[in-house]
Image 1 (cartoon, rainbow, N blue to C red):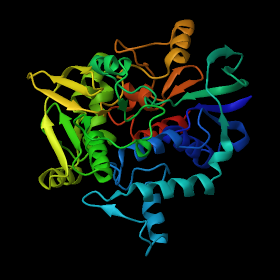
Image 2: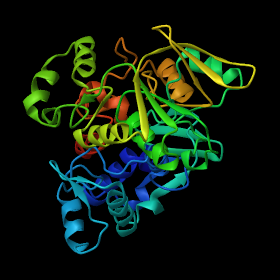
Image 3: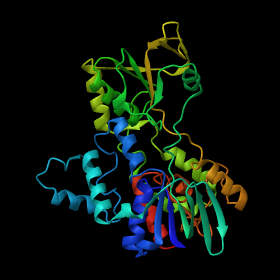
Length: 389
C-alpha cells in the first residue's frame, strides 16, 4: 500500500509530488501520481501552446518548486542565454523559460518516474486507506490527493453547441483534441471571448493570417495584472476569509475578487497595436444565436441585431464552473456522503482533508485555499497544507 496517491499529474499534481518527496521526505516508493497523460504537464502545455502564450501571467516566484527563488536561481545559471526572458513589472517569465525550468525540475528530481499512466474510475474505502480503480487495475493508498483541474471541461454556450451539431466549423481553444497550429486556412476567423485567452489566441491566429481575424468581446478590454489581487496569497486577505465559516459567503468572495475576462497591460497593448495596424479586427457584441447558411458559412446573430459572417469560430470562453472530476467524484460523494457547500464544491479542513485519507488541491480546494487555488501558486499553498498531513 502506498502512503500517497496523487490523482492528476498537471501543475498541481507535479508540484505536490515534488514537495512531498523532496521537502516532506516521503519515500519515493511510497508515492505515485496517477494521470491519463503520458508526460507531466501534458495538458497544461497543450493549452498554453494553443493560446500562443508568450509570457505567463504569474510572477517569477510562482512556479512548481517549493522554493520561491528557484526560478530566479535557474535564470542565473542560464545567464547569457536568450531563454531566460522576463517582462516587467512583476518579472513574469516567458513561457519557454518556465517550461525549461519545469523540465529541469522533473528531470533533476526524477518526478516522471513517480507517474502511472491511467485514469481514476472508482474510489473505494478500505482498511487504513482507499482503493482507486483504473482500467488497468487498482491502486491502494493510505492517503489520496484529488488534484484534478477543470481543463477537460471547456465552456460551450448553447448557441455554439447548436452550431457544432449543425456541422459548423467551430472549436473551443480548450477542446481535448484541438490543435491550433493544425488549423487549415480560413477566409475569416472569429474569436469569441473577452479575457487573456481570447486576446492571446486572436494575436496568435493573426500571426498566422494577418487581416483575417476578428475578436468579438462582450465588454471593453479589462486590464488587470493578475486574475486576483496578490493579497490573496497572504494573510492580508486570507485571514478574514478563513474566519468566515459561511461557505456561501466564501464562494461569493471568490467570485467577486477574481478579475474574470481581464488581461495584463502588455497583452492589451499588443492587442491595441494589432488592431491599429489593421492586422486584427476587434468588435464589441454578444452572440444570441448562430446558423450555417446554404454556402456553409457561419452567421452569428448578435443581441444588437447585427449579423457577422465567418467561416471559422474559435471559442475562448473558459471552463465550466461545475465541480471537476465528473462521475468519479460524483460517485464517491454519493457513496461516502462527502460534505459539500451549496455551490457543489468540497468542504475541507485546514489540511485540505475532505474525509479521512482524502485530500484535495486545485479547484476542489478553493473554498479553503481561496481565489488563487486553481493557479500555479495555489499548488504551493496546497502542498504546504498537505505537508502537515
